[in-house]
Length: 459
Image 1 (spheres, rainbow, N blue to C red):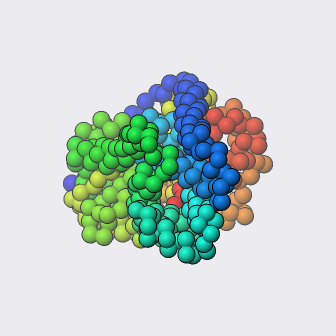
Image 2 (cartoon, helix red, strand yellow):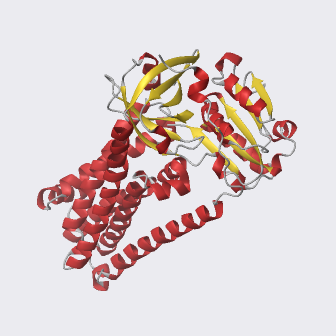
């Protein structure tokens, strides 16, 4: 029989450090940015230095020079994209997975744009040099140069993935469709890399540079294999998670209780999440992020999922004994990240699944003020558990039910609910638009940036 509800979830709260290492995280982030920029400058400088001055004055010279520079810089930024996607633990511990995703989105348009300019500029330059038309030159390049057809295919795949990642388009795609399209970026980057090595003028006659480039890219690919595949596979085999119970929380939300071995060794912190892969028909091939809403206790842990798509809807029908693989835990939305003695926690809808374990891990004396918002009372999962924890920690609970217009959480309302908000760490979780609006309002109220922690639920 599965354990009682309280036995699965009731965990002793650990006391986090009074002042976490936020400055150390910022310093590490600055160091990472400096290294990335230094690598970019070296790549740019080497490309420019390797271009003979006389070549700029030849027919098509400027266009070819522009194509070479944009090609090398675009390829370097594609390398940065792969590193961001590899989820190297020390980097993830600094930025959090949501931070990595934000940087991934910021950097993403640049390699695609630069490599597009690279292809167009080189085609124009070679056409000018040969004094032929553009379409004729495209046929000549594809037919005469090894790897050019693969490069065109790679560029097409990048443009497809870039189009699918435009916010307006992404919102209209099923997550599974967007994810499948995004996987083709790995193939595109691999094709682009081999094309640069074969035809890049910077590598002709420079075997040492070619070896260094190979080492850098193999190390980058290795980080993906180790941290995206190897480490998750090892953890999944070690802990042997299976579905133990599926419990209905609200009409559109279920909790999945998993059973495994030595789960305390995962060192999951309250508020973290993992990427879950359920070995059931039509589900095994995709992994989705869900918050660990009940921290590991001996042999059990829990995740809570709202029905927002085909994958989450299918989880309600999981059978006991279904094997579970996972990647993580991830996230810096934790009690250990706080800067002040007191805290405020604000969640909308399914965001409560992140808030609840953070609240559980808070020590005595934090006097938590919790604000929950949902369209209706029966749409707030884990509400009773949150209320019990607030009472246990001598906090205050505010529940706002109704439309967004009726229950607007702007600066004025937040100041009414949390008069001393400037002296608190503020945790915000929920849909992306909600999180963005509330965190902006909180910062305008004067809460320092390093005291604002957020977890957005987005594609």
